[in-house]
Image (cartoon, rainbow, N blue to C red; front, side, top):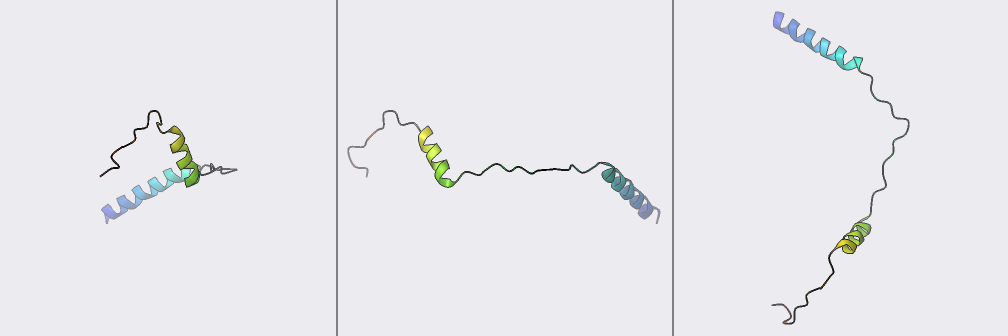
Length: 61
């Protein structure tokens, strides 16, 4: 029983320690606007290298 009592006291001390720290309060939650897939694709295309594009003359395979 002493081991059980020790665990209970340790748990109670841990609980008191957790409860002693105030939980942060938020007046307003600000979530940034999410980009759409089209906006992400457009941004990728605009930053992609386009200097001297190489064209294949043989048509591929």
